Length: 286
Image (cartoon, rainbow, N blue to C red; front, top):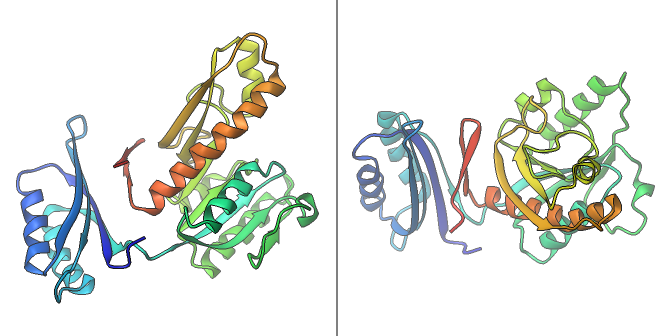
């Protein structure tokens, strides 16, 4: 990731002059626009924008941000501006199935996912993953039962605060977060569901799909909300199957879809490409 680039993201009610005001403020503070995406949602009358820029001269992000806050207030913007190479602090949650965790760790180690992994939390003990090298990443075993769920989630929330976590990733964490924890992690918790939502929610979706005789299976990465498997969708993908595939075949093929869908969603979130839009998202892929 270039060390001299910055990312500005914003959303507000659509009205004339937004792009001009953003461009003028950047120009006045020595900013140079390297790339820009925008979208007018006519259904909600909201405007969304992502700008990548640098300061080829004497400008600075702090100086720009101070001035831009007044511009943002005038338009009622929700906005963020940060260095593009500033890694977000990520906490990974996993249960027994580790294929998404393995994939995220691999992509992180080769530099494909620029993030700082501050910990791995599992409701299974460390011995569940004998072949995985976590290196110096702290591993936390937080067992959970129906009776201890509040205490277990309190430990997760305490860890989020202690480690200053920016993003929580549920890498096949097979526990439903409580309404309270879901609300606390609003738009900073990504889940991978092993189904092409909104079909086959809940448990054993591949077996549900097999029973229905579907010809396509998929996976969905979405932000977590209090409504199970109904959070704003970030990314989806599918693969064709046939009548000869067993439920076990669907599970096997689904693992590949889950890995790539979750990785793309995490990468886009880290790079400021995903903006919340009510029950949906705006994703600037290019």
